[in-house]
Each structure stands twice: as structure tokens, then as C-alpha cells.
Amino acid sequence: MAEAQIVKWGNSLAVRIPKPVAEAAGVREGDPIVIEADEGQIKVRRKQRIPTLKELVAKITPENRYEEIPTGAAGGKESVEW
Image (cartoon, rainbow, N blue to C red; front, side, top):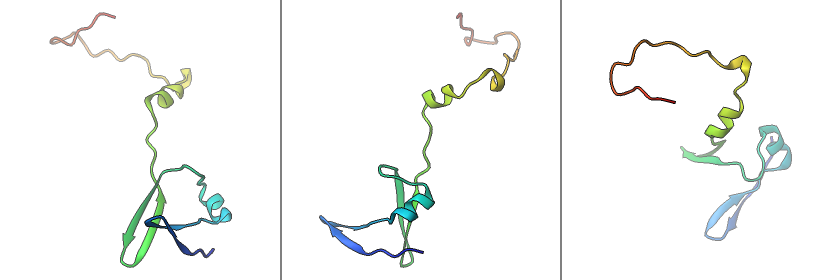
């Protein structure tokens, strides 16, 4: 367990995260976080990052790609020519 001190930073307050704690948590400068106040405690956690479409598409490989699934004849205006 590490200790730190709350300091004034402009109109706000700040806490430095000691390097060993940051490394153990796997966080680094610029990472988004969520700060919550709960019954006299301050909770800090990493914000869950939603991957971009580009990042998701980059993970597609021949091994994890599904074949086309036939769904039957078009039933309305959904028919599109590629």
C-alpha cells in the first residue's frame, strides 16, 4: 500500500499516483479514468475503453471470420446490389 497527499491544483485538488501503484494498475499518462465519491471515500478506476470500428476490423482474420449465412429470399426493400 502506498500513501499520497491531496494538493491544490488551480481551483481543484490533485493526487499523484506513485509509479509502483500506476505500474501495478497498468495505467499511464493520458489514460481515461472515472472518479466517484462514495460515503467518505474517493474511488478511482480506469474508464472502460470502447474500441473503434477500425480497431475491431483490424482483428478480423481468416480463422475468426464466418461464412455468409443464407437467409432466404428478400421480403421487402432490403435487397441491395453490390
